[in-house]
Image (tube, rainbow, N blue to C red; front, side, top):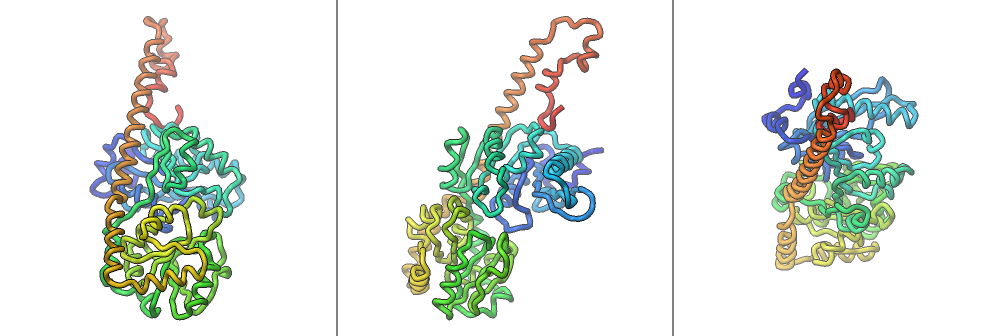
Length: 433
């Protein structure tokens, strides 16, 4: 079976991806079709020049253990379906078996393992990737419902990792003393996509009937959102309309404050967001100050700004610096402060707004997802080259230890004339022999 045809990788760039020096296997706690954010931006760019498998956390339900795959932006999304009732050890063993099958079917031998969740280490520790990357975009151990073993798994991942990337300055400060190869790659911006909101766009049907002024938010609605703050703002200014876009996670719909001027419009596709933001007067980052938000660096901050929408945030460290310190995002903690800042923003004159927008553009000109990806790619390429050098050295050392003249028949007994150490050193990276 030719894995190039059986793998399901399609499109005009498939041949070029097959010719890459290594594949990329991404282990993610986030689903590809969930909110479009850092993993999707990066993996879709990697997929332009190599094959990328994006392995999601399992889905539970009836039926036997199995794998479903589909393509998204050149990325092969892998979804494991596991039956209910498995023990923890059975879950790990089943995931390991299914992943091994996926790698074999797709002919993946030399690859980089890219982790978003340390929990994936439980079913991937037997693999022998050319390099290991830990892209830490959140302090997951502080999120509601985090597994008790997550910190232990993260420690194990840090021991194995060749490179550690962090999605914000706060995370970088927390991780840089735990690994010698920690690099800050703050979440960035697809400016052209969101700059569309600076011009009039067709109003989405479910927002068109909501009067102004509008204060909007897009993103996951979970324990990180300050629901009491939202309720307070809505109650303080009944004439303002608060528009909330995004899925619920880890909170119940019954917990959401319900006021006539609070509108929950659900999750929207990434492609739709500029059309919604174009109709807002103010963009919101209404985050609670709790353990789950201690290290967040919201991707939506530069996205709001690129859309040309003044933004207000609670005092989240990675928003205060640099955005608040440069006067690009208003910082407010209480309901009264939020109301005052929103009134000030909406009263901005044309000159003040133009000056603010010039500052926004000056800051955003120095960053893009393309630049972030290119910087990461260069470091990963370097890690792979170092692995190649180490393997070549081991192969030479193993060959030097080989007896000059093997006894008759020994070549066959040692597996074709080379000791196992030499075969392991020369074998392609992938699964253990």
